[in-house]
Amino acid sequence: MGRGHWDADGLRDILQDYALETLADPEAVLVIDETGFLKQGHASCGVARQYTGSAGKITNCQIGVFASYVSRHGHAFIDRALYLPKAWAEDPVRRRRAHVPETVDFATKPAIARSMIERALAAKVPFSWVAADSVYGVSDIEIALRRAGKGYVLGVSAKHAFNSWGKAYAVSGTAGSIAEDLPPEAWQRLSAGAGTKGERFHDWAYLDLADLDGGEFNADLSGAWTRGLLIRRNIADGDLAFFTTWCPQGTEVEMLVRVEGHRWAIEDSFETAKNELGLDHNETRSWHGWHRHVSLVMLAFAMMARIRHHANAAPPKKTMRKARAERQH
Image 1 (cartoon, rainbow, N blue to C red):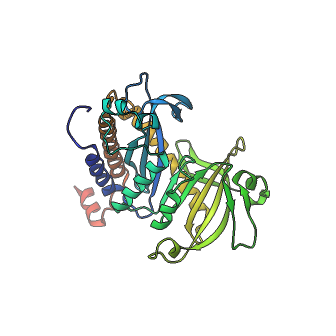
Image 2 (tube, rainbow, N blue to C red):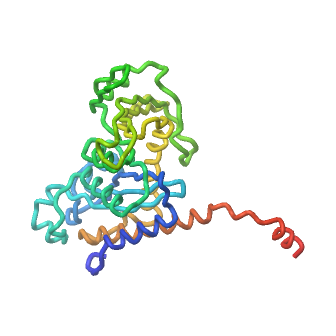
Image 3 (cartoon, rainbow, N blue to C red):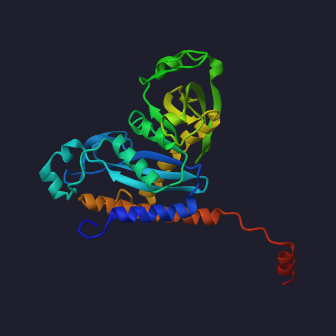
C-alpha cells in the first residue's frame, strides 16, 4: 500500500463510475462528512490531537473527509481526502517522511469539501442536493452550489446570522434567537427517513427568508430560488440543530427534511466500512498509503451496494403463459 506505484485517484474515479452505474439518480443527494482514524504514534501522515466525532473528543487521530452518493437505489462513497493539519502542511521534514506530494497545500475541511463537489460537477455526477453538517455550512460552498444550480441543506451553528428580505414578515438575528421566538404552531413533526430503528421523527420549523433569481448566479438558470432556515428539535430533550437551505421556489419543507435525513446514510456507511471492511485498519504511514487503502475499501463498499441493490430489486412479473407452463412442468 505504501510503497507500490499506482494512482489512488485513478482508482477513485473508477469506483465512482462503477457505483454510478447502479446508483445514479438525478434527484440524488451528495453528502459530505468526516470521520476519525485513531492512532497511537505521531508518524502517520496527518495525525494530530484533534476533535473527532468518532471518539466524541479531542484525541490523537487522522481525519478523513468523504463524499457519499445517496439515491433511492442505495448509497456509496465516491470521494475522499486526508485532512492535513497546518502543522503538517508547513513542516517539510514531516511531509518528506510521509511522502506528501508537493502539490498538496494546507486546505480547510470546507475547502476540501468544495473540491470534492467541483470534481463531482466536472465528472457530471447526477445529483440535485448537497447535505453536510455545521463544519461545512459557512463557507464558499454555498456560492459554488448556487452557481451550479444545486440545492443544499447545510448545518450551521446557533450563532449564525439570518435575515429576511422581500417578505411580509421580518426575520433578523442568530439562528438560536430566531428559534426561541417561534410560536408553537411553527413546528411540525416529520420523519427524516427510516433508520435502523424505524422512522426518525423530529419537530421541524422552516422559514423562507428570500426569493432570488437563479440567473443572478448562473445565466443558464431560470426561475426563482429560495434561501431559508430549517430548524430541527429533538423530541426527547429539545436539543436544536440549524441548517441554511437553498432550493427551487415552492419546495416543500418535507423535501428539505428528507434531504437533511440523507446524512444518516454516510454515518451508517462509516460504521459499516469500519466494522466490516476495515476502513480504519490501515497501518501504512504515508499519504499514498492512506489514500490507497481507503480507496480500496470504498471500492469494496460500492460493490456491496451494487450487490444489495440487485438482490433487493423486485423480480420481473411472469407472464400468464410462462407461469402456466411452469406449473404444468
